Structures are given as C-alpha cells and as structure tokens.
Length: 491
Image 1 (cartoon, rainbow, N blue to C red):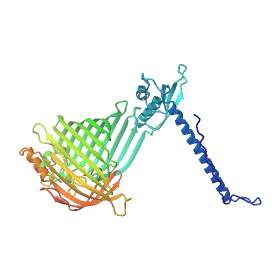
Image 2: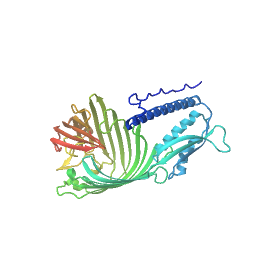
Image 3: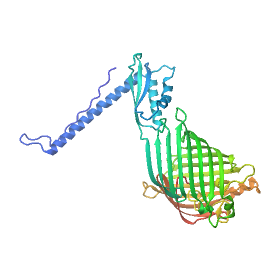
Image 4: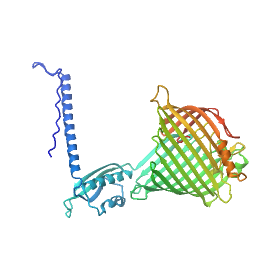
C-alpha cells in the first residue's frame, strides 16, 4: 500500500509592502517581514515532513509487531558510578527467557527496563535505541538494546528554615546518592527549633529486590524536646531503627521494623508535679512495629477528593523497661461539592500495658492543639496532675471542615473554612471497667467549633482560626478567640 503524500499548502507572502519600485531599495522593515515569512514557511514545511515521518514509522512498526526479533545483549552507557553487578541484577532477567521474541515483545522489554532504570533514582535521563548486533555469531534477527543514560548528581547539601507542627526552626541536610554503586542513599539531617531544641537523623537505605519495590533502611536518630509547656520537663531521645518498606502510597505502603530507644526525662521545672517527678529519669524501649499507609488525595494539604488511611501497631517488651501493645488509626476523606470542599477526619488509638505494668509517660498519647482538637491548648486534654498533662492510653478525635473560596477571589491561595472538632483522651483506670471507660469517652467529649482562613504554604498548611470550646472536661486547657496553627496534618 502506497503511503499518501503529506502536502503543505503554500503560504502566501504578505501582500502589503512587497512590491518595491526598481529605482528604490527595500527598507529594513520590508526585509524583516520577508525574512519572517520565509522562516514560517520553512517551519511549517519541516513540521509537515516530521509528522509524515512519524506517521510512516508508526505504520511500519504496527505492521511488523509479530516479526521475529531477539535481544542479543543489553547495555547501559553513561553509568559511571554504578556497579556492573547491580545493573546485571536488573538486566539479566530480561535476557534469560525461553519465550520467542518479537518486535512487540522487544519494545515492551525496552519500555519496562527503561522505567526500571528511572526508578533507581540514579539516572537523570534514559534514552533507548535498538542496534543490529555486530557479533560474529549473531543471527539475522538479533539486536542490541542500548540505553544512553546520564547519572544524577551524587551530592546534595541544603540549609533551610522550617515551620510545622506548631514550631519553627532551621535545618541542614546532606544527601549522597548511589553511595556504593547500587542505588543506595545516605542522608543526614541536623535541625534546631523552638520546641524540639535539637534533632539529628542519619539513614542509609538500599533496594532489597531487583524490582526495586522493597527497600531497607537503617537509621540513627536523636532529639532534645522542650515539653515544659504542658508537662514541666525536657525529653531526650536516642535510638536506632531498622525498617523494610514495600509498596507505594496509592496502593498501600507497608513498613515493618525494629526500634531501640533510650529516653531521658530531665530538667524539671520547679512547679513539676509529683507524677512527672516520678517519671523522670531514663527508660529503654525495644519494640517491633508495622505501619500501613494509603493516600489517594489529590493534595495532601488541601485535598478536594481522595482519601487517606494510616494504620500502625507497635509491640514493645523485647527487653527494656516498656512493655505494651499500641495501635493507632488515622483517616481522612475529602469530597468536592462545588464550589466547596468537605473534609472528614478521624483518629483513634489505644495503649495496652502487659503484666499489669503502668504505661510510661513518653509512650502515652497526647491530644489537643491547633492541628488536633482546635481551640484547646497543645497536649492539654486528658488526665492531669496539677498543671501537668500526663497523657492517656485511649483517645479518639473527629472533625468536619467546609472549605470554600473567598467571595469574588476564587484564584487566591487563601481559603475560608468552618469546622467542628470533637475528641477525648482517657487513662485505662484498672478501678473501672472497659465498658464504663468507653461510655464516658464517647458520651462526654470535648467539642469546639469556629471559622478561619487556610493558606497553603508548601510544604505546610497555615490556619488562622476564631472559635470557642462548646464543651470541655475538667482540667482541659481551653482557648477562646484566635488560634494559629502551622503543620502538615490537621484534624
């Protein structure tokens, strides 16, 4: 079948100022117009030839998808700092196969392997091409698959100021990509902030499978946090963590790991309660944990559709002072009701000690604050001793928000929202039955409502709210009027 010829209709030159008397030289304006017309004509002609060539190539490929073709070798050019053994683990499964190859299967292999090379996060650009095999033993249908790649920069250093979770600070981050030539990543971070006075984190991660779907990570971490605003002490944490991750956020990300942590409560204020003084000192936690996360929101800060679900479980008692089972669930659902967005959020958790032991202060839940139950002070809900919040073993919180545009300003990044929050934090008192604790927790929540402004300031969300507590339990730290919240996750 003869391919139809693609013709380009001729462009007519400009009609004005194109005829020039013989005794008069063309002026500069006429020459510029003529030059522009010639360039447009040439561009259109080249575009037509390119489109014709692409159409012809696509037709040839489609007509020969079932033609016999074999991949003789696969080569990656430009992998300067990447180990050959690592590349071999990615490439060899595509070479060792008993299935007959066709042009279609070769193109599928090219696409799949190219995507896998991009997922390593080693290469900045990957371009594939097929070459006829030049090996003396090559068969007529043998081809070489060659990837032209350029490696990303290996070293990254960044300093920044940060705001989030009701505190601000400065941090420095160092990252080394492809450390040992097998897609490993080393990252170290040092930060100073208002509440978390100093924190450091260093991690080394690497792929564990050839499909890159499973990665392992070993990390060291430490923090020094000022908890005097609600519990009259400073908390120091030093620990090591080993994690294996599999999956992705859209379909579900699993994290399974082990953590060993040394906690130290010190620098008590003169007004510290008896309970906080008894909790002061060192404690060790050795635990196994599992976290499953799924996130389909179109925007994690101001989502208009999608859902978010996070389930976590922790089992402590493999040595150390802490011995408990801890489970927590967080969920959010967003729906667009033009021109508004409705968001529902809920959180709940339970902490169960083993062997009739008391739970330790660093392991308990805290509730309340502008990113939690609004119009209550941070970590001010739940059991108290004098002015100190002791945390709890059982909590729940829920909220609904209606977000809309400012009238006549639909393109502004600032939005209006109205909200209602509710929640409660309790201790598992052995003198009471579980039924009575659950009944009082559900029927006697702390509730607040209000309106405010929401601003998306990537990577955080900023809220300025005006509201009031509607109901509160004895000892809850209520707050009336304005409240500012800065963070990543809001109720």
